[in-house]
Length: 213
Image 1 (cartoon, rainbow, N blue to C red):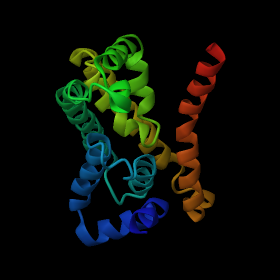
Image 2 (image 1 turned 180 degrees about the horizontal axis):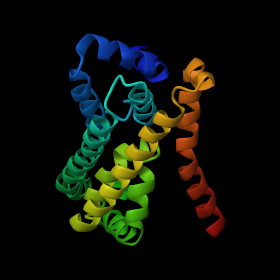
Image 3 (image 1 turned 180 degrees about the vertical axis):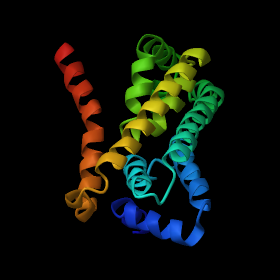
């Protein structure tokens, strides 16, 4: 599949794009990061591996590190903000429009929405920041935060911290390690490893939650 090939070989594909489209690659990267975090229907787009590959290209001078960091942090922040706004607008309507009987009534009702609101009021910052580093999850966290009516000011602050931290760490890792021979020669395995490491926070939180109960 093209998307799988792009994810596993994002370093080579990006280098090809740079050679073909020049500065337009910055716009392409912005759109990919924005879409991955901004639309709940595009969680399959590359995130961590794309940032890592971008950092590797910056290290060899193919792209400008400062421009990449600024643009992609903005894309990550803006994407989450849009996703949050959509969740805040659409989420309560989805719950209030649910059936009054059967499975949908049990799953989609005001009580669950209120519980979600209480959760994000208490743990929202932690969820928004950690969610940034977990593939798939980062696409849905801002939508749920909006649907649960997390305060905009609180979400905005943690969204900013998460966006800067996520882009900075992944891009920085690519700058430092992306061109190490063993990494460069085994980029597909490194990409899979990045995804695995990204899932660790969710696994740790799940284990802690089960132990607490």
